[in-house]
Length: 186
Image (cartoon, rainbow, N blue to C red; front, side, top):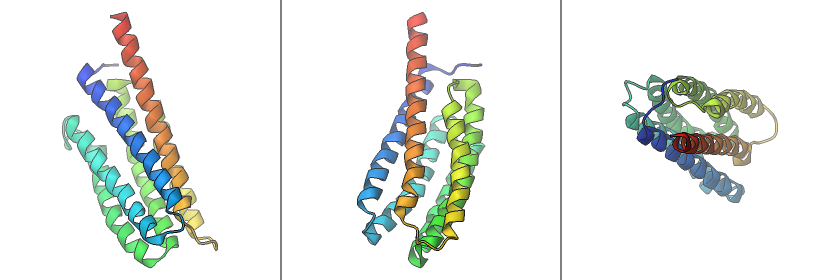
């Protein structure tokens, strides 16, 4: 395994902490907005938009979009899905959940690939790989639930975001411990 510079490793730790913090705040806001359709709609649009922006910033910090094809695809996918979510929130909650399901599958597979690719350089990517796989599975669950009789709400998406926060936090802590161990052994 090739180890990246401490600046790059520090960037990735900070990035994972930021992603975890955003998701925790988003989940809290989603819970509070459960009975308020306008706020819930805004939060539903913000989530994939944030994912697109975060992947763009991370890719640029790690060699650019050309060097990070899975993140480039994730930026495009999340941007397109942000637009599709805007259309879906004007239709109904079933459409929103179906769109989030498709997005969770696509972005999860791309995150899984990014985690596998980064493992060679950074190590400690097992949580990101698990997160990507679980995201794809959760997407299938959301699509299935969008076909049900019970109207979905933002609370059907909040657990997905909460698990994302958990995995980003685990990855950040794991990389922090790894950096501490490397520093201690040097």
